[in-house]
Amino acid sequence: MPKDCKKAYITTPIYYVNDVPHIGHAYTTIIADTLARYSRLIGLDTMFLTGTDEHGQKIEEAAKSRDRSPQEYADEISGKFKTLWDAFDISYDKFIRTTDKEHMIGVQKAFEVMSENGDIYKDMYEGFYCVSCETFFTKIQLYDDECCPDCGKTTSIVKEESYFFRLSKYEDRLLKWYSDDERCVLPKAKKNEVISFVKQGLNDLSITRTSFDWGVKLPASANDPKHVMYVWMDALMNYITALGYGKDEKDMDYWSGTTVQLVGKDILRFHAIYWPAFLMSLNLPLPKHIGAHGWWTRNGEKMSKSKGNVVDPKEVADAYGLENFRYFLLREVPFGQDGDFSQKALIDRINSDLGNDLGNLMNRIIGMSGKYSSFEIDSSNVLKYHKKEIDEADAIIDKLESYIFELQLNRFLEDLWKILTIANQSITSYEPWTKMKEGKEDEAMALVALVANLLAKVSIMLNSVMPKTCKNIADALGFEIDNKNFISFIKEKKLLDTFTIKKLPPLFPRIEEEVLKAPEPKTSQNKKIATEGIITIDKFFETKIKIVTILDAKEVPKSDRLLKLKVDAGEENPRQVIAGIKEFYTPSSLIGTQACLVANLKPAKIMGLLSEGMLLAAKDKEGLSLIRPESPKRSGTAVG
Ligand code: MSP
Image (cartoon, rainbow, N blue to C red; front, side):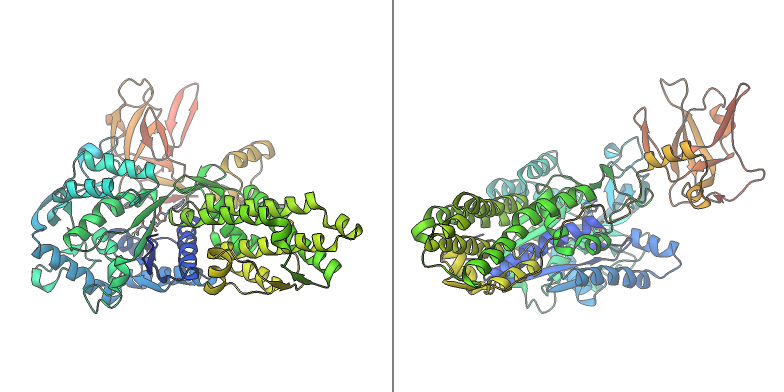
């Protein structure tokens, strides 16, 4: 954080409204909330922005499949995000929606400025598009000739007139930015990936679409009504339109402050390449830090709706406590790395770090002060007996701030906990109860005051992560957490003169067993089925079987068993299925016939080829036959 910087601007990605909030969204938002709270505490004029990304083909299709208008659908899901952040006490200053009129005006303005600066031209786009990732790809980037290299889904071929942004023009300036500004992209490993990507050469970027219309129209000056903005061009601009860009510009000075932009690793390329290039074209400053975090898995598996293992953050927070969950998310994984969510890991953190280290210390201070001095503590002898411990704690605190702004929140918490260790160990080694017995009341009370001061400092620093808990601690110790006390006890390293302690119920009651009845991983479910034999109808319907029409069939080179099929499952794009049926069917005999597909199987790679489902078949001594409908059915018809 630059010394002279008085403004901080913290942003989360804006979330797509095709899905309800999950742990990944909560993770980014909680990191951002922590930074925003810390910035405010240290006295920065802070703006914290979050919101929803509501345009584009993906949202249009999601709304259509539910028979809703895109706006209606966006209103509903955007509302769910806002409600969750309010329930989570997220301290955002502004919640932007890309369907806000002011935002759309700002995006049009940006298009105009980029055009005026000679960075936009019209041409024909020919390539591949992944609707799920809302990303363009060239043939060479695809995996297995037609699949998205990021999510593995089948891409569609796009050939349409488009406006292009001269991204290639900014290649050198981007590389210079990465090399001049050491911490512009964090963590370093992710920055190196971005640099390698840019060094391979950048193509100009298609920034408008004509094949659907759920998007921001081009400005009237372009006089080209059939185009809408590419959703990423629209979405990235939210970071400045939220500050009034293109309208009153009233908050644009936040953009020149300390901008910390949090994103998941999957969307770093958009933020660390396209976004700064757009800003260069608009002659605006670049963000100070773009931080890319890793992904959360559950019990070691990727989360997905079809597996039913997506972690609902509200459910976890309700079951284990919101602030305990916040602590866990920030402490459990180093920023940038993937993390695994399990109730066991969460319970361990709560019982150990929070209960044993912090909660017990609070209990001990209440107990000792009550027993020895009617809840009154005086700090006048602390430095006489415990200067070493106070100096050690202050030295730890000196380094903590840099961890926050380098986004190393796990290091921040790890080091903060060292102060609790100093406090807990001091009690053990100085044994105040023995000192009291020996009549060394001064020494015993100096120890109690040492512990109270260390707890006070910890609660000020921990406040941005666990605001309510720290307020409870501060109330019990008899002081307030605010900027004045931050300066006094953290920056100026002062001690609180006196404390009047109030009793407090235990902060972190021990958790003995998992609170949430989590869905069993599919593998153990299968074992159960095999041993017990009998299943309920609900269990049967967990397997989604669909009628599919085989559109294409090819042999898989070097395989005696496999055929590569393209099947229509009644979805937007055909699926690829790799089936071990080559001995029993020739490719041409399959084309145009129907079969039954297990449609919610985890996609798998077979001989390096993506297989998105399994065909049902029966095999005996006579051979193998596919299970098919007796008479033709519409592709996608559910079986059951
Ligand atoms: N709308 C775009 C962002 C536009 S910002 C100008 C988008 N939205 S998203 O809803 O799909 O994803 C939002 C964020 O959630 C991304 O940063 C993504 O990395 C994050 N996560 C999605 N799943 C996740 C996990 N399982 N774990 C952690 N974060 C993950 O992308």
